[in-house]
Image 1 (cartoon, helix red, strand yellow):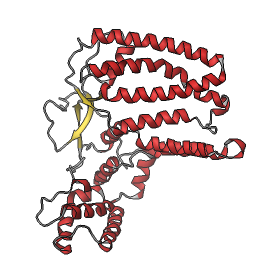
Image 2 (image 1 turned 45 degrees about the vertical axis):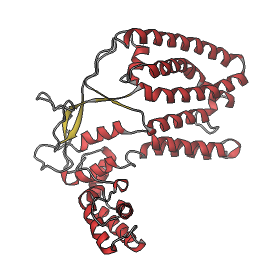
Image 3 (image 1 turned 120 degrees about the vertical axis):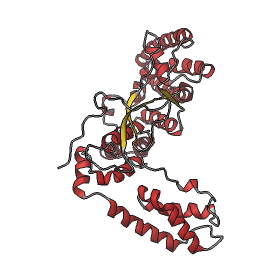
Image 4 (image 1 turned 90 degrees about the horizontal axis):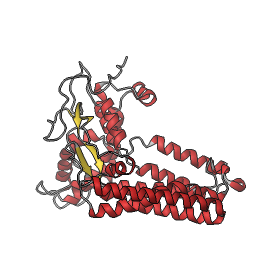
Length: 379
């Protein structure tokens, strides 16, 4: 959202006389400055400090680094919107005036963006772990579970939220002057995660949760075991249906020109494992834990897990030998839909206003109604 910048890991020796390690050191200290300031001034600062340090310098000295941090924090404070605008944005998600669009672009691009609500949920469970734990207090397992929930909230991908916030706050309104961070409404490709990259992780996570549920079901006796048997039968039927539809429909699948396939990266896999661990942890201070006996809390997860695990296993095996362009959404549609695989359509989104749409990529909307709802003005 703005001109691309370079991070500390992207330092190179393309400027004569500057060691890459020195450039990385300076750029690490420059993280105290706002993102948009670094885009505009980082190269200049690196060159100036390299001249002052002399040839052969490999790292910035501590005194100069602390000076950068102090001035960077002051710059952040000076470039921050007034408190009244920040309060309106925080309370009712009101758009900021155009003068502060760069601050909003920095915030949306920040790794800390939108972590507050999820971390607040983790704090809520942590309070329950402390105040409602059995025997008058929380156990170490309870506190570890609350910490795991916080980690899970941290690593869960938030790309969809970022796109929605960018569409609301970075699209210029009529009468406003252009800024380097402006976006414009456009038809964009629809992102889909490939089934081959995500199914192995989902299968292993579901299998791990199922093992914990089986152990609890054995402790509780015949009731949970009967539920396990019924769920396993239904899950096996779903797996057979998936395999049958796969053989019939995948070879005849339509082309997907409006789709962009993405591999499930580290954040997706880590998030799946964390959510599985959170579900399996089931601490004694869980707000709903009093409704079920302790061994039964993990067995609650057994029914849905037994329903989906056979289909995940079959989907994983088929995806390993299947086409590369099959998305996880296609696998889901094969399982639940009866018709042929549908063709994805372009979705409404935003692209940088200063960047022409690539071909065959995002295509601007040719007339018609506006893509985005009108944003309320500020008084």
